[in-house]
Length: 270
Image 1 (cartoon, one colour):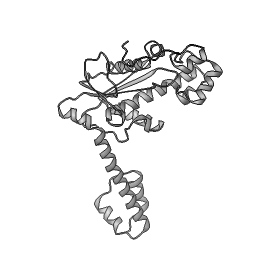
Image 2 (cartoon, rainbow, N blue to C red; image 1 turned 135 degrees about the horizontal axis):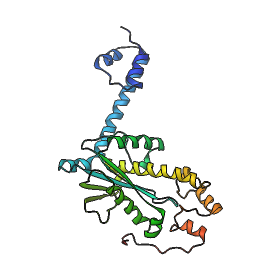
Image 3 (cartoon, rainbow, N blue to C red; image 1 turned 180 degrees about the vertical axis):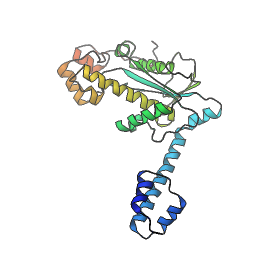
Image 4 (cartoon, helix red, strand yellow; image 1 turned 120 degrees about the vertical axis):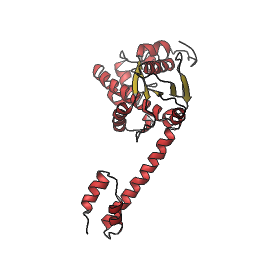
């Protein structure tokens, strides 16, 4: 019996349905080049799926170790927006149910904007609990950006509807939070929950910067999100600083004619 390669391609490649053994055998014995091409494409997809499965298992090693001990509510925390010259800093906290897996999750900096947006929806739908917190520009200028990032993280943790039992944090510890916590250097590339938090923090802040662009036109906030790129620096010199610019950051202080601030020790409490 001759099978329709167009149907096979639609069902098993485009729709990505699992290829059953009978159809696979028929394709293997089919002399047409199209049948061979379909089998090769399916083999590549299977290899990719196995590689993604291994990557996700690696991303879950911290969570799995805690889940195995009966620590169910493991929250991953990360921030976004530490280096921009304008806008608040954002942080997110995410708790997944034990055994959760979302293909494609990775450090937000490695993903396209479209991928982050798509994954943010999946994360929110799959998470047992999630929360986003901000530290505003006035707080950044008052307590410095390092501690503002910690403050945003604390607010994200406090916003969780499910109380976390353990915190996994990207390279930091949160002051004044009485919860077991673990700082993981490069955690957004090593932990699924931290990576998920990095995606939610980044997408939430980007969305806010799009809104702030409409309130403060001319700077291009919707494009560069406040980061010190050439376009932003040129607009800053041309237009001066607006209310959402961080007065504690050197390029903004220069435009305003303010003296440089002394370097703040990162362990200085606020």
